[in-house]
Picture 1 (tube, rainbow, N blue to C red):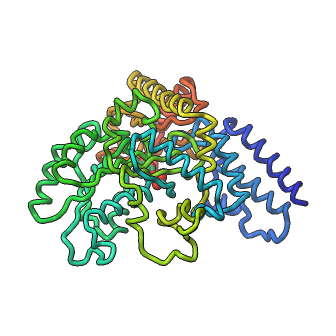
Picture 2 (picture 1 turned 180 degrees about the vertical axis):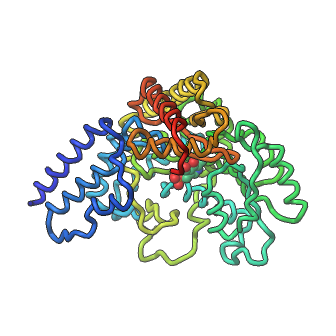
Picture 3 (picture 1 turned 30 degrees about the horizontal axis):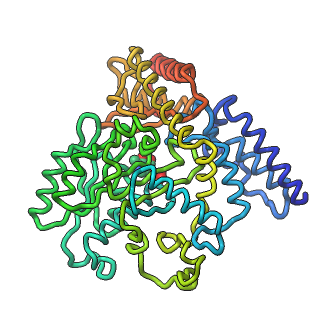
Length: 472
Ligand SMILES: Cc1ncc(COP(=O)(O)O)c(C=O)c1O
């Protein structure tokens, strides 16, 4: 096969897979041992395009169709077509977005997009960078705050320095725990603030914890509000945190990985994120609610351009970065944790241009409207109950019936529906209770798909009740 035939074959396979993305089952399920042999991982593929395409075929055949209406499991779904185009071009041109000289177009696209986002969010004189995801962005925000709170940490480390404490809600994402670990704070210095009935951070509890921290001689340096918590979709209120910041001078970060996309819609922003423009930093994933191909994240910093590079500083990068020339001054690498940087800007830019702010905002509003519909379906069905009040984009529910182990029934129900290729819904624990977390992102999904989804849940739940319970 020559190069042209390789491309033709590939495009043909991709195109037909894409056409069928919403049809049939969302997964041709096999147990791991069986799939291992179906994939023929041990076969020799040296130089054979036929063998190579056979693996591509198997990859496509046994993958989860994340674009299928039955895939309501995660904070991402099948990617938008413009961003898929971007990914393909990115793979083909294979550059690292750390220097302008090797990646001029992606550098300017990233800078352009960051400028657009800073304007949109309302951060003035700030800066930003694309990172590998919000976990990374949250950690970088915490690091910038740490180095601002104690200017000596970069050189001295945290040894024999006054303790620094960070605060997040008890329902914040686990990336915060990892950030505290990686940055040397230790998990004890990451205070988990209790939440209210909606799952949002209780600001008076935060105030008490801040006072106690100061009273014992430690320094509260970082508070992260979550804009859309992972399980319940709660939004921590920013207004009381902004007031507390005046008193305690911490860095206020907003983790908008999941729910940050409400900034695109004026009304939703007023409802969920008033005061965002006064925060110190904001992380936001385009690969979640907005459907850009994984990974597509941006970390934005308010005011004080230069803090990102300043916080990282150290190390001799002169073999790579030269700010004495015109091109070098555009480099994005000096402000990044990474040296090699995957180009994520092209797909981001293409989605932004193709759909525009308005188009993406409609998508967010549509998801929210379908979540409200799903909530009503749960409320109206005696076999179902909400496991948490719905506050935004997460519909937390379970199958209910009297006098059985509901956790076991719900676990079994979800697993069986998955293995049968019927549906894959998220699962989490709330106060020890198994809860299903329905996330509606697929733009092809309609109210009747939601009806079908719940009908499948109830049907399976009742079927399980009709036989002896076993473990999934
Ligand atoms: C609230 C929140 N923050 C951060 C993250 C981590 O984001 P990423 O997967 O981009 O690292 C998640 C992921 O689900 C999340 O829900």
